[in-house]
Length: 215
Image (cartoon, rainbow, N blue to C red):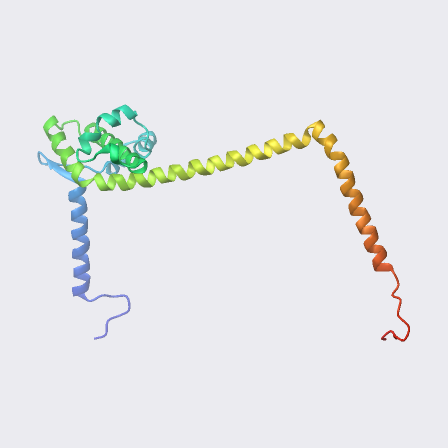
């Protein structure tokens, strides 16, 4: 029996469904932990329904915490990293990731106040393993968007300043007085060129002897 367009054999459809379920299961395992019979989410964005717009902006935008607080917690989440050997870009990404860890732990403890210190420590250890790369990718994109926005704003400011300075310069009485003779010379030159062009166009064609004009 031929297979209809758009349909899949049962074996292929079942395999695809199993693969999707397996991927979803892995993501849930990375984004959650079971503590005392309760599932606690490690991904802070899974709590988005429970916080307001200010909290959402605080979570998403890097630079909301003091640099001193981030520096104190660098070894807590990156004990294997030699920060002095990092490039400025890598250092900024990892510092923003540390900030993301701290924000996430603060949100988790707020929405799960019954967690003990030992449970929070267990949660933090799993988060440091499963969410580190995800946090780094997230903050790298966020920092790139911020850099692009700042560059666009800088260009717009420079353009507006140039236009403002040019307008002030052109409206200055001294400038206008200096430009007046130049404008007059340019106008005179243009009129002279136009007059000479019209005279050349209107001049009758003089034929040499022996040359007849074609009709």
